[in-house]
Image (cartoon, rainbow, N blue to C red; front, side):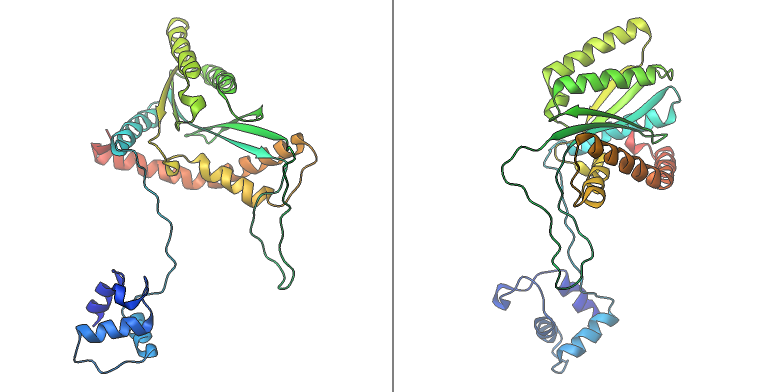
Length: 286
């Protein structure tokens, strides 16, 4: 019976059941059809049988996959460059992403007394000050280089940030910068790509660190470690706060960002050690 129950819960009920998920009654009826020797069972008997078979009632988790047909190839290329940057002292792997913030509360979750509704202020159509945060995260040291830009991100602000980034690592005598980012328009724009090409030509002449960029596959935010940091800052730290000035907002974001990165560093160091150990045993990522 345990085997039959495990097999049933892996599939949806038939259309005749009128539901997309199993109830104790419908599952008991389906078990009786597969095991005619069983006597009629109450829903409590079915529950005990499921518990004995280690079958639990759980909430389904969201699962995303990239629609990019070259996902495996692009991830393979990313892993290869990441492995080289992590093994070479002359290189550095850097994650770069952006997010914009407003001086207005974000939707958040918190404890509340029953009968006292938890509310978040909403705005109408009035303009609200916006500011964009460009963040580059050093994969090895977890050092974060932050740059604030007015309004929304664009190619001009991206070039300013890239210039700061290359100067930062030139002072540390790095030979190359492996930059991992997504396919945002200001990353792939002609203006940004021309600047990267011109910079690499100048870097060859002046012995500056070469800039190697790798775009993640389409719609694959799970490959970018900065994504959960931005989300955590917005919903867990900013929450229902209303900031009087953009400077106050930026200061709060920077403090929360640095705290979040520092807290995750021990686990990140373990992940890097495991990554390098697996890459040395199997060259599949190469």
